[in-house]
Image (cartoon, rainbow, N blue to C red):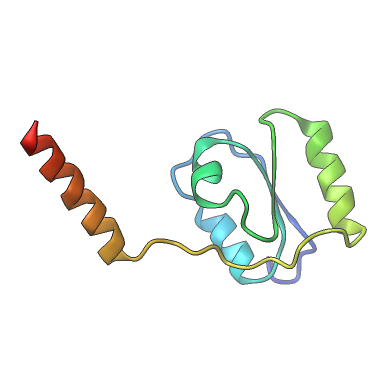
Length: 100
């Protein structure tokens, strides 16, 4: 269903990591989302992701019209950190706290 869609609207106000957005990008479906922290951190700047201000329905509709008119980047999955990178960062944070 998502793969055959022309776009995905993601008007979430609260999220930690959106698997729905990640799935859409892997399936080549462009996404329009509110600029909540989880989207900003993980997906902003990823090809195929349009971020609009939270609650700005007019901006979301305008972006949808652009996508439906063919004016968008080809969606690509973002580069996410590997488990090794995440663990190195976590260990580094712990070491820094222990030194204080």
